[in-house]
Image (tube, rainbow over all chains, first blue to last red; front, side, top):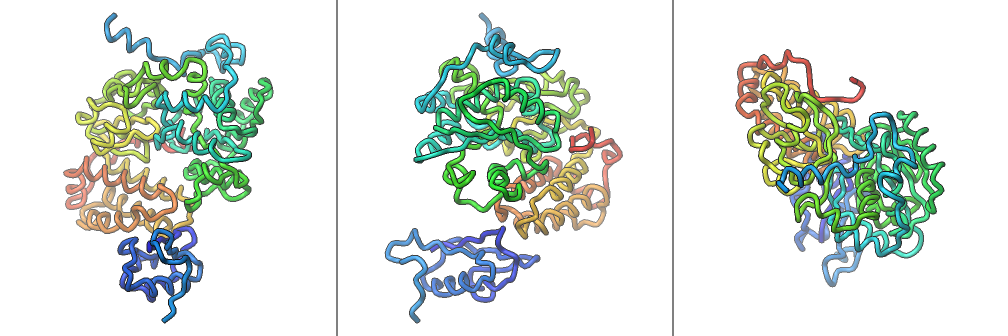
Length: 77
Length: 418
């Protein structure tokens, strides 16, 4: 699973850094800085929640590269 | 035959039909080059074999781009990019004003090869005389492809290919978030081939003379000729046609040589990089050679900066211009570029506070790679190269104050100053 930000859509609400502080920090202007594109398995649920919570849908999760993971699957737990 | 004669024979190609007395008419153009043959999809093989790469700055293989567009089903669109957003470049304008039929022949050949029935020729909308002359040129040709001459807002990032596509789709002339790329989904969601006008002009000659002829100039790995714009402290600034692989020094000498002892050369324009003049002098003008030396070929601009100028002040001024030219879409660019411009101005003109360099070191990674387009990365590459080439001067500026060079009239060209 990979994480991307659409920098045009992002307006710096900062929700993602609240929900996924392990991978996302904010720059001095409030825009997200990603620690890396790859999302470790144990953070997948948090990453999905952060992507869904983004008010401008600027945080993108690409699950297509991981076999066996359906796109947009919600975490059951 | 000695090598000098061979070199002299390879150029001019594009500029062979250049007249002192005005634009080349269609008759004059046909007399110079002969009429172009009609082409189909097999022309793409020829373009691939020629090794032509995009002359707009990125250097992507033209044949491969054509192949991607041609491989899709249904209608396609071709866009000729004549916007030339780089203030230090004049080559596209020269082609469009003096040799328009070379560009138009190439546009038609590209459209026929990829199977497009319509095309756009984009230039800045404030160039009303150019728009008129291009419309006249198109009207007198009777091409099998529809060519719409289109004015595009004259800001720096408007000439980025996704900006052009968004503008032609009725949106703002600003870059979009990729993917999809124009080759996959562009104008009216159709696969769209966007080529720089010089690239198309080369196609106009390849369609007549073939790929082997094209490769007979330049290097095996970087074939053909290219247009370069030489500026700054040289005796004869202007546009020259060179073989790829010509040395940087040779390019400067063709422009009459240095008008004053040079300290550094800015190669590749404002998306390029500074190199010390003596380091740059023997380097070959190819994407690979300049990249290996920490520079960039870009769209072939060379600017000579004399010893008496302040490289930091020149860079600060251009960085301010570039910061104002952003599309204003991405946060790191909206906030980061003005902050970089402030820090560069601080370093260049105020100095003596010992904190501009650390401010720059903090800001550069916060901007790099974080925009939808490459505009912010171009700015940081320029600043990085300035701090590398003028490292000692930068330390002196930061610790004790500006050098005497800042009193000199700025040399780097910016729009609205000529």
